[in-house]
Image (cartoon, rainbow, N blue to C red; front, side, top):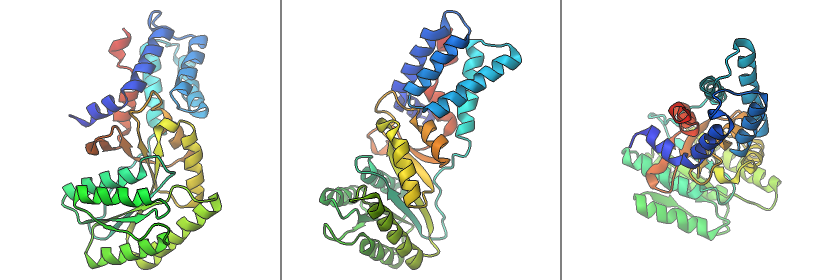
Length: 308
């Protein structure tokens, strides 16, 4: 299955919703008027593109119609596609540095699929022949430690773990020490998704970052925020909170196949200016894909032929 087919399959619910809405609004007439553009804006909001993003996209369509006089369905779709791609223009794939230790620090609230994503990344890099190590630094949940150990067994990946309730920074310290000793290519660190207060979260992540900076100053560090597409606009709140707590370098959006709200990727990028690095398009271990903006947008929007 091609990458485009995987995106198309994963985003099928959103695509069906947007296509049906396009047909309902204007397909029979073959053009968009002002009322129809208002309806289109609401469709984008309902697909979780966010109000700011939806307004920007429809305003660009209005401006194009004003300048060209062309309000055809095909043109509206083309301008909408171009606007979405412009929002996602800074998308960067997750890349490893082959000449040094790569540390993937995974952050995000509980329930986003963070620990599962750690396991899927371990599988990806093990399949590429990389030396991989995982660290169970979410010590507040016994289930998280056990879950990452299960992924370790599934992927033949060693896991550094302490007892439930132990200091997460101590786990990270030991994991870095082990990574150096084993000449590891990729160290994947799972962290807690919820502490007692936002300040606790910020302090804990800051402490972990200090340990990494001190013990592995030459490592290629990516701090990846995992967000759940099915949480809708709450994903933006999460993204902003974690961006304040630590230096997030990229986003992983999971469960894009879960409902008709795939537009949340656009909303989060628009709000945070953070690049999406990976997309979770299903439950299979191989459904974690490098985020590709063109494949994403083309999978989100209807095929022009379906509107004729």
